[in-house]
Image 1 (cartoon, rainbow, N blue to C red):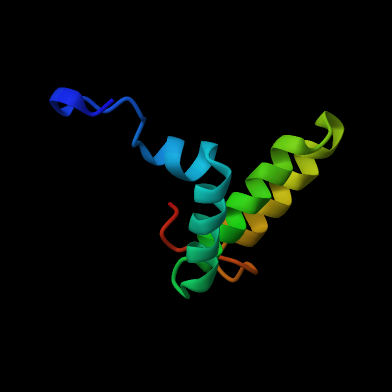
Image 2 (image 1 turned 45 degrees about the horizontal axis):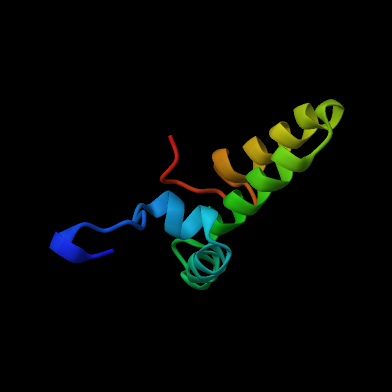
Length: 82
């Protein structure tokens, strides 16, 4: 409980925006709706797709992620990534 100021729930970003389905959905929508952060939302989706892909497909998926997000001129280039 909250007695004595102790909080049982984890308030970290990971718990709220990655592990909790509604928090994840809301944060994703926030990223996708922000012009400067839309690429980050798309990258997150692609990284999750990478994790679900077959081992034999991962090399090509990783190359496409690199081309799209890490390369200047890529479809969803994220200049904040170095």
